[in-house]
Amino acid sequence: MIEEKEKIEIKESLKEQILKKEQNKIYTSEKFKNIEIKVKESLKIQKTDQALEDITIWALFLWASDIHYEVFENYVDIRFRIDWVLVDIFQINFKEYKLLLERLKYSSNLKLNIANIPQDWKYSLNINWNHKIDVRISTLPTKYWENVVSRILDSQKNIVNFEDLWFFWMWKRLIEKAIKKKNWMIIVTGPTWSWKTTTLYTILSTLNTRDKKIMTLEDPIEYEMPWVIQSEVNEKNWFTFEVWLKALMRQDPNVIMVWEIRDYETMNTATSASLTWHLVLSTLHTKSATETLDRIINMWMRPFIVASAVDIIIAQRLVRKICPDCKVEKTKTVQEIALIKTMMEEIWMKWLPIKSMKLYTWTGCDTCNHSWYKWRIWIFEILNLSEEIKDLIRTWTSSEEISRVARNGSMITMREDWILKAIWGYITIEELLRVL
Image (cartoon, rainbow, N blue to C red):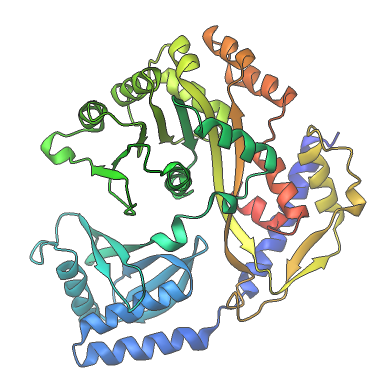
């Protein structure tokens, strides 16, 4: 067993290595310079629609999820969130930003003359492709002007195949079994922007056949799905999740997706739907699978109802995937070997010889724009509510005890899932310390 002090020293040593590598990392600046020149030329002749389209196309080309327009005293920064890391692209002046801001608001049907309150909506973009790109806009008044964040919603990148969610075979089989059931409740949990909704959309696409009626309750609708009846909550008109969900249940659905459960009323209605022969999919914000049970009970749900309604809980994180084109095998350091032993000491695969395990690093290439990483990958922690665990829930057992019982079964933690995927060459140890 590794002492706690030694664990801290190992983590601090690896964090220093990460910082050094992050400081030396260089995105392909020539490409970004091309964006700047083209956008500023379009703004100079007041072709704001062309400038906005160019920025969005480059964001799509670099697989960015968001475009940030950040206003400071003398300039405006344009930054892309690439693989969940913000990258500086270029700066514009206030005159140029005024033109872009007006075009963003006009495209999104926002009020041009209002700058002192937040606004949000979305617009669609067709770039001669065979599918539509939706861009969700959020404005926020700040000290100097309005900040804008544009979230890019590309359904072809975000509604993935079930095979591409990176479940281990045993978890894949467990989830496939769960979604074939006529009722019960499947909950996906994790922090903001861990792509919980993407996991739900992927499960829905698997269930989406003409013999089922699938209905969703979203805020907002992110991706349009064929054959799925999608509705959007409008809390400004007092149509809350609870009210809307009760109305939705009278529409005779087989499968219901609730975008997010925020309070007791919505949770109570969702569990009632599950108990009355509906398959219910939803999300919560919690740190782990077992802590989700605490969160539900803290909403004043009765434990015996939770045990009767919930079938499976999927906790997840989204992390950067190592670039497959420039990854190379690396020599494991003493600290990394110690970290692997620490993470794997309780897993049922601990008998695997650590010395034969491989770790990988990167060299940088044009595929990943010399950023080391290309797109992202999920890591999971999945709690299957067996009869033993349901009995523990009914007797108000703590999440720590439930976790211990689940670990005696077949559950592996997110850290262990991470280490296994690092060993197989999908992600890095450094990314583990950055995220977890």
